[in-house]
Image 1 (cartoon, rainbow, N blue to C red):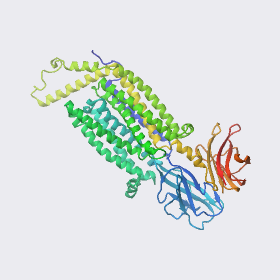
Image 2 (tube, helix red, strand yellow; image 1 turned 180 degrees about the horizontal axis):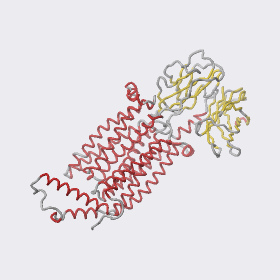
Image 3 (cartoon, one colour; image 1 turned 180 degrees about the vertical axis):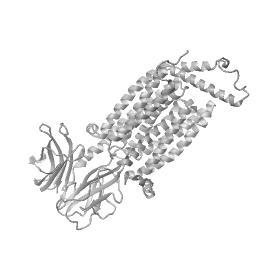
Image 4 (cartoon, rainbow, N blue to C red; image 1 turned 60 degrees about the horizontal axis):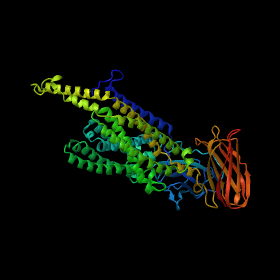
Length: 640
């Protein structure tokens, strides 16, 4: 079979360059858009309440301020600061006390005695159990509200330029892991001849370099990322030491040690293994490399599982090994896809058998991804409302849609794979066996000038490579497969960016619980202040927001009620009408109507609200955002 290069269209030599440029531009564009559209990284843990509550007005100065969180956190000396109206410290400047009991996570700081009346600011910052920094601030008043010189921080922990660079390093780490593990697996399982191909060697080595550099950057930036937000603190030895004592720091150091073992693996794979010619010895070495490489790859994947979302929350003992399997399947699929793309564009030797073996590996990876992904989705989302109503759920829907697109494109690749033959390669090999006297001098080596002989040898090698490339690019089956694999790789770039976003976004289950999605997160113990968060959606323009309600002292008799409404952007939101009603259904009492007075933008209050008896009261809230858009929401809380 003879083949000729097509006369029309772009030069085959420029196609790999154009493909690489396209992928590079796509990576930059997608990741830039995702970073631009995302705020600071949300965390797994969330503030669920405080005493005094946000905006509360207390008659006498409390002895301490306490904060409650949805899950375990790590705190330092200045994690909770209380500032008086002039900006001076009102707390005793001691390390926060751990007041946790059972499943309740609570920390507190003692206040100085004899504090004067006025508005006080509580600023807090901590690290969630899944490694992400969290922070916030609120105010309360003693006696009566007053002016304050303290400005609430506008930037959350993990934001700013340091946060952007840290997120880029996180993305690069995932990309490097995919290329390192997926490329190595592609060579060992699908195409052993690829061990001698320079483009394949460069792909795997670049994956190792990217992962190593990204891990070092994350380790150095970990202190400013979770603290000051200043690049200068990256080289603070005391801060670096404190990072090494944390779970994320230990995970990053472990990853660097495992990357040292991975470097040895790469040296053997592209050195001893590539030069081995005896089939039996090569088979034994393949088995050894597969076992050793599998252990190293599993260990590297575990450094993510042991320090991020999988390590905290429900069923952590199951979630961590499942997360490792998920990451390995992603690497085998997407990393193998990148390897196949490089092999098809940059090497003339890959045959149809190797492509078909990768097709089988990709199918197995997709099966593992589906099983582990379903479990992870259930664990992190937990409900249909969290799937559609939280940022994590929306990103998860986008990820599933991208996987569906990727599978659709992969179906076309499988069709091209079914048609693929090695006829072009066979024709090329046969042409090389023709007598060289037809196109070359009788003997290059006979040339008395060694320098001229070497020059002729280089020219002959260049002509042979060009001929191979022309024959390969003229094969319509291989051209079709290259185009479909390139499309798969483009979708995979976007998919990897979305996956990175998921790792730094608060899981939907936790977000709903923190917002009052479950009774355990919103119903306080009997006889204490009531703090509720109730999301709403009137269905109209700017109709989404959150209602926050405080009832103090939360006992039978007279109570003070405060209501705050925050818009979807987290800022105070005014509405034309707000009504409340209390109902004790077990005793057929109510509804008792309450019409609070507006105090400020997004803030209403009502005093002397009478609670006739203790019980599980249903609190109905009616919010009207326009002449026709209105909704009534309710939640139960124990009062008295």
